[in-house]
Length: 328
Image (tube, rainbow, N blue to C red; front, side, top):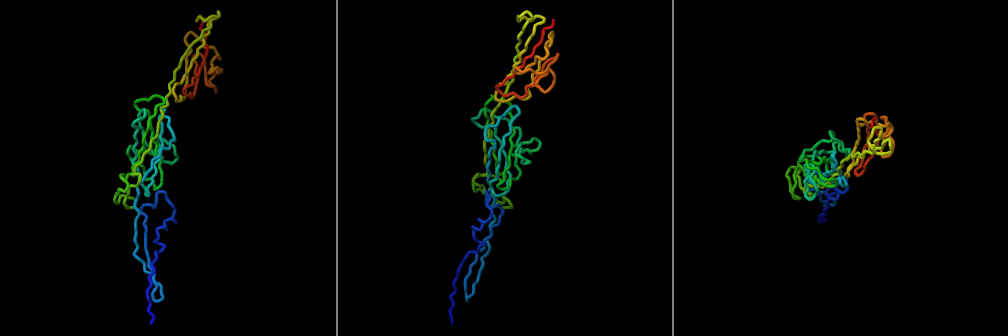
């Protein structure tokens, strides 16, 4: 009788190998929350010349949700804050592995800067075009939450600002901090919120503490217009006396101080009583303007002159001249 000695040979089935996950697409946020990782081992051996396979029980592990976030200012430098206000743009990226909403806080009172701007409103990029559109992009209350951001997804947040009650000096700067905190909670890495994760899993605080922030900087750009007027008189006798028949040449100099630009700058000047406008004497920067309301910047007549200077940058000036005659 032949004595058969069983020889046991054990092997892990391919379905039980951890590295099988490497064949799946790689995600920056890791395995999605709620994913079931199933593991079954098997043993094979020979007995009586036959191969026998014995499976183990299956162990299933459901992946918990990691809460992580990154906040980034997208402005790339100082943002000009003018009389029209300014929009700061931030990006909130969900670097966790499950969908998560984030509470948004904005702090304009940062120590060490020059002034504290006013926060007019906070909104998120509803239509995804990257541009703030009042009345289109949905607003978020201070401390309010964003919509759920998918794992590895990003959302642009707009912070609309103004000077506030105390107008700064031209060239001063103000820092604004935006903080995003996971709506589920934040805390020390490894903190567990039982049952609060995606698909009923536990939520676990990641390395970011489920909270992150970034700073953006506003640069105050102010502008102020001064308008000065002077007159040169030429009388009929070759002198400079303001007698009837004398010609008066008025010069108007519009100057813009500061680093901002002034838009839609228009200079108007009525013709003084007891004088008559001298036709075709209106000039801008030494160039003659027609009296008619046509394509050039000026118009003039018996009642007065008007010159549209358009946009004038800070530090620049524009000079207008015209002539009248003292009536005889």
